[in-house]
Structures are given as structure tokens and as C-alpha cells.
Amino acid sequence: AQRVTQPEKLLSVFKGAPVELKCNYSYSGSPELFWYVQYSRQRLQLLLRHISRESIKGFTADLNKGETSFHLKKPFAQEEDSAMYYCALAEWSGSRLTFGEGTQLTVNP
Amino acid sequence: DGGITQSPKYLFRKEGQNVTLSCEQNLNHDAMYWYRQDPGQGLRLIYYSQIVNDFQKGDIAEGYSVSREKKESFPLTVTSAQKNPTAFYLCASSIGQLMNTEAFFGQGTRLTVV
Image 1 (cartoon, rainbow over the protein chains, first blue to last red):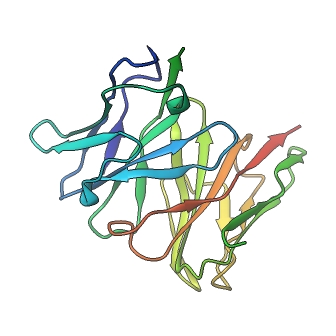
Image 2 (cartoon, helix red, strand yellow):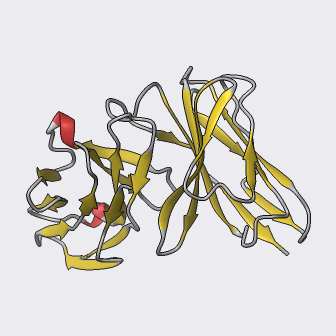
Image 3 (tube, rainbow over the protein chains, first blue to last red):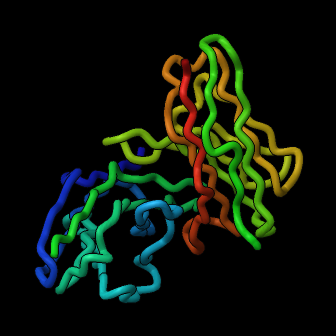
């Protein structure tokens, strides 16, 4: 069965510092990976997906199949990045989305 | 205004009672999902439906039931068999397979058993 692990429940950085949110997965097939974000009082929404290889709001994520990781990175954190971040995996059939436990990011001024 | 609407926002239930959470979407999406969100556990899949009149159990389906009689509606019933129903429930939909598209989420329903 597929599994997504986010080892850090809480992450706190200062504005302008680099930030990395860790995500590891286990899946026997070829996964598609996503990062979803939930800002305060807003709906959970897609931040970025591996397949599109985009940089959204300065965030990037690289799929490392050898380490089965999909860490989210931003070189210079902003206060508005404070939110709950979820890593998610879609299985090959595309019918299910499995989420990690989430990481609460706080960017301090 | 297109999107997913969950109602009510807050729901209180007495022990032993069934309760139904509403989820409606006007995005013309084929697939719909129910997740349960608990602190420190992320989102766990309860049920999902890829097409009208068809649905599958997720990882934590025990004590829950669903129906998908209309494309735009996917109600979730929390039965008295659910041992720990107090939680935040999220409904989502997607236009197709999640490999190629994103899931759109509702604003959630917070259920409290009193």
C-alpha cells in the first residue's frame, strides 16, 4: 500500500531564510506527487505537482526516485508562506490521493 | 460561483445518532472524495466515487456510508457504528484521474459528538 511521510509536524524559520519541507513516500509503482497547501481560513488547494515541473510562489520540488523523496524548497521564505503543507501521492490508476501528516510552516518576521 | 459546497460548517450530534454531511459541486467533475482530517494524522480517505452510482471504500470506511445518485452530490453519513466520529471532514472533487488533474476541496464540516 502507498504511504506518504512528512517527518516534521512543525517548522519555523525566519523571513528570508531558506526553507525545506520534507516528504518521503513508499509506492510500488510509478507515483505522481503533489504538494497541497492550506492557508489560515482558506481551503486546501494545490500548490504544485511533479508532472508540471513548475515553480509556484517561489517553491520547487524535485522527485528523487532513489531516495523516494519529494521535498519542497524555497530559497527565501516570506511571512505569507506560513501555512499547513501536505505532500500527496496519486497512484497510477489515478483514483486515490494519499496524503502525508502535514507540516505547519511558520515564517517569523 | 463555481466550486464545492459543504454544509453545515459545524455539526453537533448526540452519541448513537446517525448524521449526514452534505457535499455539492457545480464543477461538472466526475470524481468525488471524502476525507477525514485529524491533527497529526493528515487527511485519510473515507470513500471515493469515480462516477455516478459507483463508489469505493477508502482506508477508513468503517462506520461511514455514502451514496452517489447524482453527479453533483456525494453525501456522507456518519453512523452510530463510527467509534470516534468527532473530526473535521473534507469533501473534494476532480475532473478525472488524479494523476493528471488536481483535487478541489470544500471548506469542510466540523462534526462534534456530544
